[in-house]
Image (cartoon, rainbow, N blue to C red):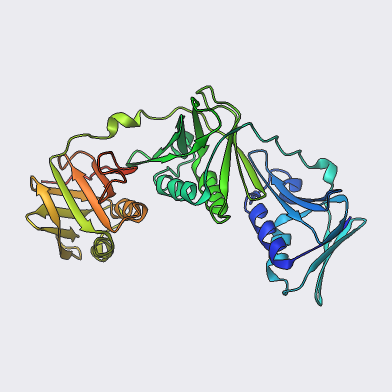
Length: 379
C-alpha cells in the first residue's frame, strides 16, 4: 500500500478522525487509526471504539490499494508538524514510512485483522445546515450534566416532529431548549433520540466548519430512539450509540406567564457579572436586584470581600431580588447569541427564563430558551 496526498488535507482529516479515539483504550488496537486506499484512488481514514466511529474519505493524487493500522494520536501529531509539501506514505511489512519534504517518520503498524468493523450508517432521516445545527447544539449542550453516574442528564434529547427538531438538555440546575427547522426525508417523521452531549457537541462543531449540509441518520424512528445516530457532511461521517431515552418532562418546567421582564445589553451585562463574581466563592451566588430602570449586582457579604455594580435596564413588572450561580448565568448569556439579553421572572424562588431580546418571529416564541434555577437567599 502507498499513497500521496496534500499535507494540509491529510493533517485536517487525521485530526478530525483522531478526535474520537479513546484516551484510555480498553484494548491497544482501539488506539489505532485505519487507513485504506481503495481501487478508486480514495483514502479512507477511520477510528472506532465501539461507542463512536469516525471516517473521512479523501481524493488521492496517487495510490496503490491496501490497508494499514497505525497509532492515531501519533499520526495526528506527526501530520500536524509536517512541512508544507506533499506527503508520501508507504507500507513495508510491519512499518509505515511517512515522508514529507526532508522529514521522514517510520511508524510501527498494528494488526488490522484485530480491528473492529465500523458500524453501518443508519437510514437517512433528514438534513440541516451544518452551521445552524452546530450553533443549536452548542446552545443546548452547555446545560448537559457532567456527572457520568447520571447518564440520563449527560445527554442531549433530540425530538423530531415533521420539519421541526427540538434539542433539550438539563443538569437539574438549568435547562436549555432550542428549536430549529430541517428538511426531513419523510414529512410525517416522528422520533426521539438521546445523544451523549459531549460527543454531539464535538461532532456538530467539527461538521459545522464544512460549510455544507449535515445529513442526520437514525437507526430507529419509532419514538424510542434506541440504537444509533449518524451524521454525514462533506466526505465525513460519524456515528454514536444512543443513551436510554428517559428524560425529565421538561416542557412542564417552562413557565408561560411572568411577573416581570428585564432587557439588558448582553456584553455589558456579561462583563458586570464577571467583575462582581470575582469576590464570589465557588458556591455563593451573584445577587440581582431589579427595580425601576436599574439592576444592582452584588456578591460577597459580612466579613468577606464584597462587590457591587449598577447597570441601567429596561425593566417592566414587579420589583424582584433574585440570585444565581454566576457560572450558570454566564454560560446562558454566552449561549443566547443576541445583543440583548431578556430575563423573564415569576418569583424570586422560581426559575427564570433567559432568551435573546427579540423572538425570531415577533408573533411566536423564542427558538432558544435557557431556564436557570435561582439560589434561595437567606432572609
